[in-house]
Image 1 (spheres, rainbow, N blue to C red):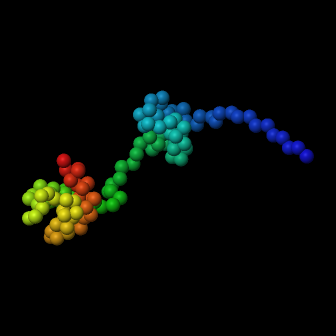
Image 2: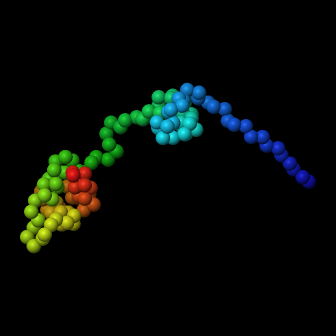
Image 3: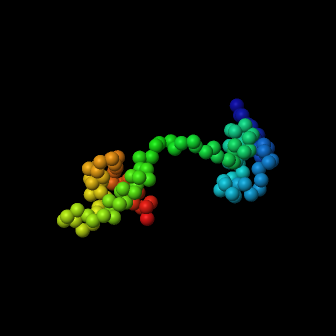
Length: 117
């Protein structure tokens, strides 16, 4: 017994002709991606190419402007006796001993100092 089938390939119909020619290049994506997301958004083009702004960040930041300023001030101060300069781990120990400062990892302190340049 032999079974044979014939398949013809036709391009899928374009569902939304309202996607402008320059929109994919502005968004750094393809027309197919925009059309797929547009289908998921039930045809609302503004919701497809726009983005909803968050009212609050997903996680409350541990490092506020006050904490950042205090870490930078500590890093710019004189290192403890017997030390030539501050290391991130030494700053971590001093931040842990400082009253009113949240405990921070040395990598977090490094990011704060890098951002404060």
